Each structure stands twice: as structure tokens, then as C-alpha cells.
Amino acid sequence: MELASTSSVLLTVVCVLVVTVLIKVVNWVWLRPKKLDKLLRQQGFSGNSYRLLFGDLKDFASMRTLALKTPMTSFSDDHYSRVEPLRHHHLTTYGKDYFLWFGPVPMINISKPEMIRESLTKMHEFRKTKVNPILKKLVPGLSNLEGEKWVKHRRLINPAFHMEKLKLMLPAFHDSCAEIINKWEMVVAEKGSGEVDVWPDLVKLSADVISRAAFGSNYEEGQRIFELLKDQADLALLMIQSVYIPGERYIPTARNRRFKETEDKIHTSLRTIINKRKEAIEAGEEAKSDLLDILLNSNYTEMQQAVGDGKFRHVGMSIEEVIDECKLFYFAGQETTSALLVWTLILLSKHQDWQARARDEVLQTFGDTVPEFDGLNHLKTVTMILYEVLRLYPPVPRVTRQIYKSTSLGELSIPSGTLISFSMHSVHRDHEIWGDDAQEFKPDRFAEGISKATKGNNSFFPFGWGPRICMGERFAMLEAKMALSMILQRFSFELSPSYVHAPTTVLFLQPQHGAQIILHEL
Image (cartoon, rainbow, N blue to C red; front, side):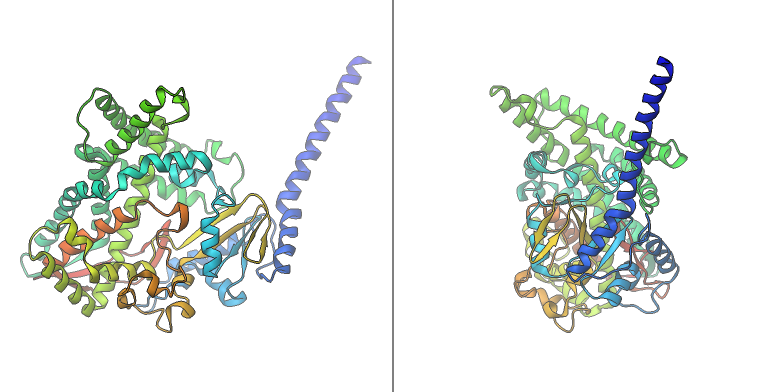
């Protein structure tokens, strides 16, 4: 009798658990999405009807696959339909105010600059997305932190990007650029000209810059870390193109095991470098000018100062946190600058007048000498060109934020559990702000600065906006100016007939089939 009673209780408990789980699953995949769909339509948004579990993800995958198979028929800077085919479809079908389904989660498109600025400023209400933990593994550190931890990490990292520190890194920028230019000079030496796919060389250049600037004499080890990061990024891209099922990353599939093995190798390499530097700092050795030493010194100083206050455990970063910040700097810094440089060379190849103007400025400023810090910061034409490239080809085509608590945005009521995003392509090409020539390459629109170009609308966000604006902006711009100046000092260039215009995103905007350019020695 007792056994029967115990079995009955257990069966009841199991039934309750099963029913509870089923209710939560049904709510997640159907009831809540249908409720959010109704709320969004009541506020004037339009979009496809919700489809069970996958939403618009299948359309996203099929449209992207088709786009990758179809290069643009002619050179055009209006590449939205190829880079973001699903969003382009929604924009042309539903207008600027639309939503799409990221699985069972609605994602609202925000188009008004004032709302974009508000969402980027109110960082406590509009937080970084946490849809798939794989992305957090790939791009960890400051970019995914919130609250007091984000404040602490940003404070400790900030000294590494002060202008006086960046000035010390200029020799590393020059040495990395010189290696690539020497390689190109060998290509053109015999005939005075030659064709080069500059994309892989620019990826190597920016990777080398980060390695030298971050790790100084250990940059060769840094290059090995980059190779591992690229492997991991390729895996992550495949893994995030499907609905995320909680806990699926722990299933020992071949892909998950490979991702974990690569992650372990990266952490082991970074930990070895960091521990050596940490020991040197604690032993009182003279600080170096690379980013790792600056970060570790900033961290070590704060921890030492806090010992006497009894707050030691609440300050500073752990070794694992330092590793995450190094990994973020590696990945984001390298991808951003290489993308900026490749599109700059492509556009200057198409617009020979602006190439000539930039070269004249560089030669008047530096002649054939090594570009120096003050001169780079006063290159007006080069800066205008880089801004215009960032407007038309921003490295990150869109920004996304997640709402964890119902809030307001302008006159909108944004329900909890919603994603909001805005497309750089749309904002950077809004005719009401930029004029009828918004689709055209016209660097002189920035002749009087960003504020004048945007008519005070704050509609230029290549490095983000507000409290979370990218700290590496000055680093990236200085590196790009150094590289472009050294290239212009030695070569003129034009697009090769073999170049195929096919912008695409692999987390960052890049040329799918490379960037074949014909270099001519001056």
C-alpha cells in the first residue's frame, strides 16, 4: 500500500513538471510571440505573420544563400539588397517601420535618428543582445558586459587608448605597413605595375598591427591567436544561423567539440603571455608601450591602491577577464580596420580624382618620409575620405539591442522580450539628412565636420554612440591613416577587370571575392 502511495506521489510530481515545462514551451514558441505580434501591429509596425519556432529565419537563410551566389551586376554603393536581403525585402514591402522574427523573438527596425540616439544612450534599458551564447564566446569582454562590471572594465581599459599611448604605438603601425608595401613593391618591380588581391594582405596587415601593438615582441604568438580566432569565427557563423535551443552548445557534436578545442587553445596562448607580463610587472620591470602592458599596469595599480581600503576583491580584473578583453581587442580591432582599408582602396580605385587629392595632401604633408603622429592627425582630405567610406561601407552594418523590461522609446512602448535594431545602411543614406546624393561617394560632404554633414541629426554611427561608443575608434582611424598614407606615397591604383563587386557580411562587411587591384609604382 505504501509503495503504491509513493509511486502515485512520484507520478503526480512528474506529471506536474511535464505540464509546467509544456506550458512554458508553448508560451515561448507560440502564445508570447502572438501576443507581441498584436502589440507591435497596434503601434503601426508591419511584418510577416509569425511562423512557429523559426519565424523569418528560414527566409533569412535562403535569401542570404541566393545573394551569395549572385554578385552585383555593376559597381554600385547601394548594396543593401545583397548584404541584408531579408531586411531590404521588409523595407520595400512594409516601409521603414517594420519588424521581423528572429525565431520566436520579434526584432523591431528603428529608423528615426533621435530614437536611435536615445536607445544607444539609455544603456540600462536597451542592453546588448544575448540571443546566442556562441557570440559571447566569440566576442567576449567589454562588448557584452553590463552595469558596474562594464563601468570597471571600461575605466581600466580606457588608458590604453589615450592619444599619448597611441602615439607610442605608431612605430608598430609603420613596421606592419612597411612589410605589406615591400611585398607589393616586389610585385610591381619588374613591369612597373601588377595585380594584387589586397584583401588578404590587408587582413594580415591589421592582424600584424594588433599583434605588435597588443603584445610587442610577442607578436608572432599573437599571429597564431589570430589564425585560431578566424577558425572560431567561421564555426560561430555556421552555428548562429539557426534557432538557438538553450543548452545545445553543451551537446558533444563535432562542431561544438571543435569550437571548444579552439577556444581552449586561444585561452592557453593568451594566458601564457599574460602571466609572463604579470610576473614582470610585479617584479618591478619597466613598463612597455604595448596595449597588454598598459592594461595590466592599469589593473595592477588599481588593485594595489585598493588593498589598504579592504576592497581588494571588488576591483581589478581577473586573468580570465583580461584574456576576454585581449580576445575582444584582437577580433574587433582587426576586422574593423581591415574592412575600412579594403573599401577605401576599392572606392579610391573607382574615384581617381579623390585618390589624386589624397595623394597630394599626403605628399605635401610628409613627402617621402615616414608619416608622423601630428601630420596624420591633420590630414583633412584623408579623414573626409575615411568618413565617407565608413558612411557607405560601415564595418558593422547594423546594431541590435535587447529589451529585458518593458520601456518607452520616443512615443513607442517597447514590450519586454523584444529586440530592436537599426541599419547603418538606411540611416547613413537617409535622403532627408544626407540629400539626394546620399547613395554617391562624395567625401566633401564632411569638409566641415560630422555635425555639419549630418545637419546636427547625429545620424553617423560607424563606431556606435553614447556611453558604449567604441574606445578603439582613434586606434582604428590612426592605423588606417598610416596605412593609406604609406600606400599613396608609393602607388597609384585602379580596379582590375577581374574584380567582382560582391559586398557581404561575415560578422563584418567585406568583399566576398576579394579586392583585385592593379598597382602602379610612382
